[in-house]
Image 1 (cartoon, rainbow, N blue to C red):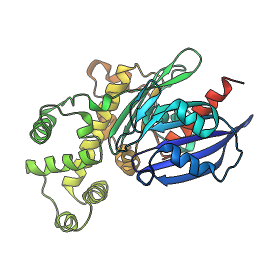
Image 2 (tube, helix red, strand yellow; image 1 turned 90 degrees about the horizontal axis):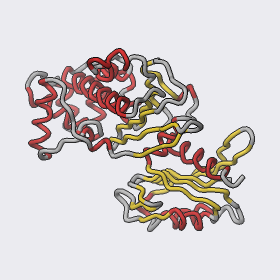
Image 3 (cartoon, rainbow, N blue to C red; image 1 turned 180 degrees about the horizontal axis):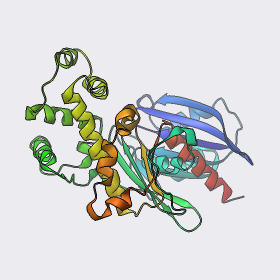
Length: 331
């Protein structure tokens, strides 16, 4: 048996998986409010209280925060975690902490095919490295590296690298964001929930797109991001439509940057919550336009497979399969 989790600042998911010759089977899954507990160990104790005597071969947790020497301070929570202590709390022989994007990256290898949306068919090179990018609350980036026998997830802080504008409009966007946030503007300032709204505000400030009466009326009483997405995807508002289109194009450009940096012949995977919500636009051309706009490497980019997970529990799947890998070390 394996005990795994997906640990975020708002929500903590814990699950038990059974491993056998057929693979992994989900036995139990529970969700907890992270802020209502003093530590992950407290949540684990509560989870295990209904499983008296249950023994675990391994435990693995995907965590929203950097991992250093098996320890982590969770982003947006006053929790500090240690692999050895968590293994003891779980009653497991082995324990592992993964950055949340590492867990998501590893999970991409095990997502059911019907839950992966192809954005570019491309040609997968067996054993090629993979790039993983996920726009959501923030922008996460990671890699899957091949050692000749298996893939290893590798975290990065690539979402905080400098935004590189590609044309006059994006240069103006950079200046707009610098006035708001200072000289350093990262890709996360655009490719995130808050960034999506900032992108809308920038385009509105240019005066090139006149908002419709429906948009103005709804913004008075509704959350802006869902309204902008709905009106943009439907084409009912030109300002919203341009916001969605430009977001997808910049998302594609940075995904392409990541693929070039790791020589991603194994392909590119997209996670996070924003892509699936903009699914119609992500498949509409803007994403691939940005992805393939790489000058002398444009033809190369068209050969790379790009897939987006539609399974919101991909990080949990990654943690479960990594725990299985740990358990096999002692087999």
